[in-house]
Structure formats: C-alpha cells, structure tokens
Length: 323
Image (tube, rainbow, N blue to C red; front, side):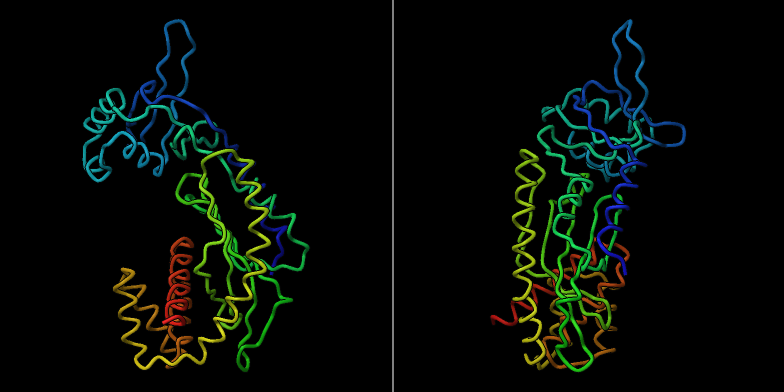
C-alpha cells in the first residue's frame, strides 16, 4: 500500500507528459474540419499576411461540449457523414446566438480536451493535490488512485483509525477526493468508511466539499483547506452510522434492493453485481444491503460510477436510519 507521495508523483508525471495550457478564444474564429481519418479539428482563421496557425484536434469530450455549446445535438451530429458534420458545425459556430467566448483547455500543445466557459476557474489536479499534501504526514494509505480522461479519484484512509465493528471485520476512516479538469464535476472532498475485508467503501451522504470551477482560484484553494479538516473530523459520525446498520433489521432485503435498483436506474449488470454480493454475505440487516451495494460497486468499469454507487449506499444508510 502506498502513501500520498505516490499520488503526487502520478500527478506530476501526468502534468509533464500532457503540458496542459489554456487559451481564450471565440468559436467563430475557427473553421471546423473532419480529416480523412474522421478526426475532428478546429482550424483558426488567419488574417492575410499572418503566419498560418496549426489545427487543434478535438478529443471526444471536447467535441461533445462543442456540440452542446452551439446547440447541435451530438446524437444527430454523430449520425451525419463528414461533409454534413462540417456544414452543420460551421454554420452554427458562425451564427450561434449563444456566447462565443470560451476557454480551450489544451494538452500536448494541439489537442483540445475541453471547451468551457471563459469564466471557468481552472483548478487542476496538480494544484489540488499539492494543497492536500500539506495535510498528509505519511501515516495515510492510498486505497484508490484513478486518473481517467474525464475525472480523477483518490481515496485515502488512516490505519490509526482502525476499528473492529464485528469479529474479524475491520474498518478505517478516510476521505475521498474527486475532481475533473474538463468540466464534468466540481472539486469534491467527502468522508468515507473503508472496509478492509472486501476493500469496499461507504461514502458519506453529506457533501462537505463541492466547489464549482467558477470564480477566483484562490477562493477554491481556501475552501479546500477549510474542508479537508472538517471532513476528516466528521467521518467519525459515518462510522457510528455504519455500526448502527449492523443491528438495523431489514425484513425483506431482496425487495429493498429491487426498489433501490429502480429508484436509481441501475443497469442489469449493476443490479446483478449487487445481488451476487448480497448472496456472498447474506444478512437481514441494513448492513447487508448497504454492503451489497458498495461491494457490487467494485465491479464497475468506471471509477466515477463506482463512486456514484457508493454514494447511493450512503443515501440508503441515512434514509433507513432516520425512517
């Protein structure tokens, strides 16, 4: 198991490889082009006598953001042949009534990873995790470290908080940090309970940190500093709820899981993973149901989705304990 230094090294390596930079622009100053390999690009218009600027490749997420911003449904765009794609995007980019001023978030100098509002306040992983490092002392352990195209997730626990809630069943307190550099989610810092037996986590329902990427970066920085300690202190309350779930009887757990699946639109695979997890540790208790959700969440192919399912488990826990 690694400590927080491994997270910093990953973030620094990613930053060095991608060389991120931001560029303010107006969408009507670009031409949209689909290459012979079906790769979309934005090509800047160049005034006569000026040096020609190179094309900027649109990554998938940036292309979807462009379609949304100019009012072209991506589902329609993706069905069009390249010539029609170029015509539609070009027309709306030049004639759109929406705000044309944007920030282009670039990597590797010529790839657009995101098209966001010019009011967007960049608060990227490098800055976020450097701030968080001030609160780490080497006693923490990293349970999850995921840096995907759209979002980042890091889960940290403190072994010193280890507690046996039932014979052979040990939990640790921790925090989960989530961020997106492309406008998918706000900065999130939230408490978790990590169960060592099956490596699954229960996410607190109360969102202690949810900072939108809007406004002065210094404002976000100060909020992160304030929240990190609050979350770490408040996670003890989540542990107590976890313990209470062990004695909270659920007469018909299978019916409850059916309702949870329907209320939260779980996929067939997610529903099956939840039921399979329950059958591995069947229990007519709230703990049995909550654990089935969090354990089943590990089967998710996306860390984003795993985090969402663990958050659903936190909601179920809160709702049942207050019913």
